[in-house]
Image (tube, rainbow, N blue to C red; front, side, top):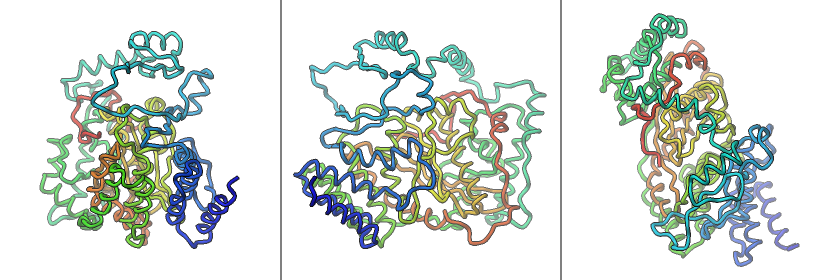
Length: 558
């Protein structure tokens, strides 16, 4: 046992417990250990990661599998084994839940994690390397795809994607969608009398309070929104979710506002209630009420961070040395320091070049999203944690109703909620809209029950994160305001691009600190509106999916 090293590490940990050093100061001391003593240095790195992530006292509830990985296991094991400069990564390769595993045979799934030397993206390949397809359930691999498919079908049928196992149902659905590609959603109709009766029974909306309207000059946004809601009661047919996301949110009294983005999904109906000038005025008024103003870019800070990042690919500094420099930023400038911490986490985790394959949801969270968002929002000493609260797989989610599960992540104290999907789902607009609807609903329920001024919403698709804040500016009108959209880079080479978004992320942090807090005044319950139940929403919107439908949320995520 290296007794002297053990005592040094224990002393550093004790300084945090005694309050004589911050977590970041302790991490800096550990990262300054002699890197030539390779294994002791890796152990010190792993301890440094735990110091930054562990709560002072054990959490009151057990962690699920994803949170166990992101907060406890992944930081420690990545510190021991990760070497991005050598393309050696600890990868989370399976997101199947324990319940799903129990229904399968002992060996019929991939491992939860593996330590691997990965191929990185390149324009040229070694002439002696041939591309093969590997079986997800064993070590077999095949040059021809048809051989690979035949092997999996015959030997590991349960490893086939859910879509393939339900091929008959999917073929029917595909044909149904194909037949209706050129038709508007309303062309797919049930019997008229049944549809009228269904909608009129399911929906009822309360008018805004006479003394609590959202007035912008002569325009009454609360009244216009109420008329928009009433128009839903006249709908005869089910609506498609992709091109009616504003209507879906209006069902639960939420108005989605995206600056500099026209809600094409509601044309021409939307501008019967809100013309473009009234919509812009409403957005500006919300920004004024909650003081949502993007700060100027701190140019000197940006140049300092970019210089530190550039030293790593140039070979003049190690990743740990760069992280130490960022952690030495002035902590009294709170939000800039948080941003620097988030960049430091990405420096330690990002590969030098982009990986040749897409990440699944768990790896996306552990390598890209969690380090970045934890750097921005985590404050263990104040018991504020970014927590991954749901480990349900995509296949399981597809079998549930729209709102019938927990969010993928939350910021404790119910200050924020988020949903995450891997990049392979970016073109599935139905799933993207459904996730946004869930995020909005979680935020609304937290605002109502916890009497919050506002609640942060996050929608993650691949490495793109969209930040929202949900507020209640007037009776019966919840506004979900899009703050900004940023993309986490997939490699160290592109990290400087994220630094240029510092003003947008400082705006997110400022809004989170000022708006996502408990209200000092107890708002009257008359301002609140009930959340639509899942079964009602399922009756109002089609469950069929069509990726060719226009959608307000459609954009290039990655």
